[in-house]
Every structure is written in C-alpha cells, then in structure tokens.
Image 1 (tube, rainbow, N blue to C red):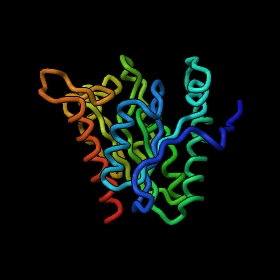
Image 2: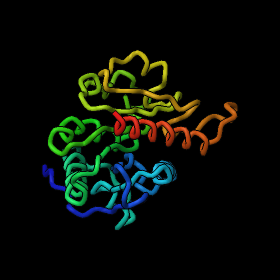
Image 3: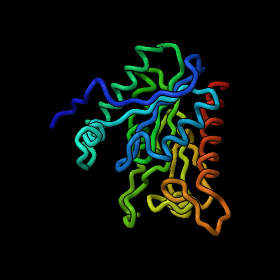
Image 4: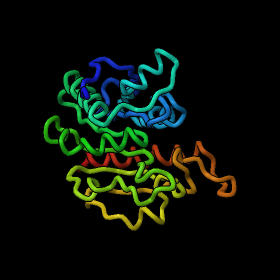
Length: 222
C-alpha cells in the first residue's frame, strides 16, 4: 500500500490575502470541498476576515475527473495528502498562523495529525465540523481514543442529533482538556435542524461560523 498523495490537488481559496490566519479545511467522505455546508462555512469565515483554503483528497479529485463514485483512500493516504497541504501553506506563508480541520472524515484526519503538525509546522489548532465519533448505528465502534490525549486546542462542532454521535452519547466520552465541544441546536450530521425546532439550516451554519470564528480569534488573542 502506498501512502503517496499528489502534491497538487483541487483547492478553493477565499478571504483576504492579508488575513491574520489561514483555516485549512478538508471535506467529508461522501461530499466534495464545494458542498453546500463547506461553502457556507468557508464563505462565512472568509467574511469574518480569515483566509480559508479548501482542498480535496486524492479519491475525491479522481471522482471529480472521472465522474465515477469511489470510496475514500486509506488513512495513510488521507493523512499524507493533508500533510502536503500544510507544507504548501507553510511554504507560501511561513509566518501566518495556520488552523486545520474539516467536515466529518476531514476533521477526523486533521485531529489525528494536529499534534504532529503543531510540533513540525506550528499548526495552532483544529476545527472539526460534525465529528464521526462512531459509524451510525454502531455506538461501540468509537473513534475517540486520540481525542483524550490531544495537546493542541481543538474545537468540535456537533449537531445535537448527529447519528455519528448524538449529544447524549458524546457527553459521556472522555476528552483532553484541550478539546472543546459546542452544540449545533437540533442539528444532524450536516447541522440541518428539525422543522419543529424553528431553526433553519442557514441559521445553524451561521452558528457554526460564529463558534469557529470565536475559536480561531481566541487562539490568536491568547
């Protein structure tokens, strides 16, 4: 099995060139970097003054080229693709603070790497948008071990009724003191609320942007 990943990958960049920090985001397993949620979060953070870079993992880039669906690459390939994007950002803006994260699987990959990349590349923190704590319907298959030991500040934004980790489940897990969990009201895995909540999807996305902006701003202000 190879862990190689292409040095060039599809990217979308928004926000001011002179932004005080960059937020580097990866997509989830089944939707690309320009999905509605990713676009809403990226544009919202860009409007708050952050430079936001979205990129695609190799398998998603192939899907974009061929039009044929396929499953995600293995974790070593996903991780190497993320490392290469961090190196690219560091090469272009070595002094600008860098935060990494992503939607679901993308956030999980970022969280698995953030301590390593904090040490090697000065990454300042991690942002997880709908963390996949376990596969839907399989609450015992947890993906949380590393979250109990993280040394780098990490924000997890989770829908209260996310089938990958509902609020009543997640509140029983053990996390490092560096991990914050904030709840998106009545949200599912993409933060979509129920009709009965009286909230809209756009409002929940705006809430996610506000929490994310507060996290990045707070890390910079110390």
